[in-house]
Image (tube, rainbow, N blue to C red; front, top):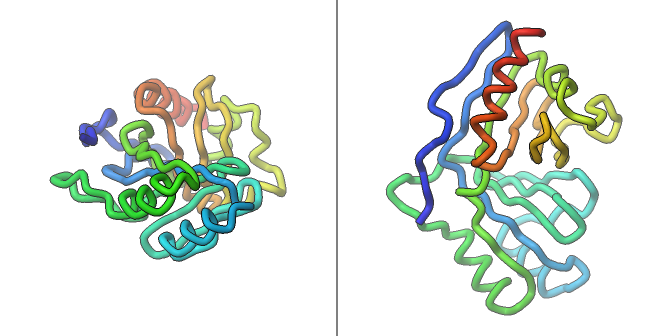
Length: 189
């Protein structure tokens, strides 16, 4: 059963920067081989989109965002919050039936594993640069791109929707720590 108890109970705004937790959001890890035509075809039909093939790329439809995490791994995220009263995820069921049960790949619901922070404002990457080795000014990290990196010694996935709108995925067990670090870092921008 999914745990809908949010580890973060506040939002934070400071000097044209704000952050809040987006919850509850369905998050599904999908693994498979794009060279396997059955896997690629089944996943594409269920998702209604072609899985991203290039590093750091993202595909988006009305209800779902698909982020490339590796040559055989994607993170599927619902664009809308889900019903707290129900743990049913139709997408997960469809993927499991046509991918996992047919031994074409693996489908894992990671909704409880990750906390999702939405950050907006002008100073997001200035804050991130204080605690990450990643070059956020790189030409390869433009709008609608995703990267996995470290932020204040914590593994994170960063989806840059636009320069001033970012979704940050962090393991639930590190979310309080990272929230406090980001909140504290905003005082110095």
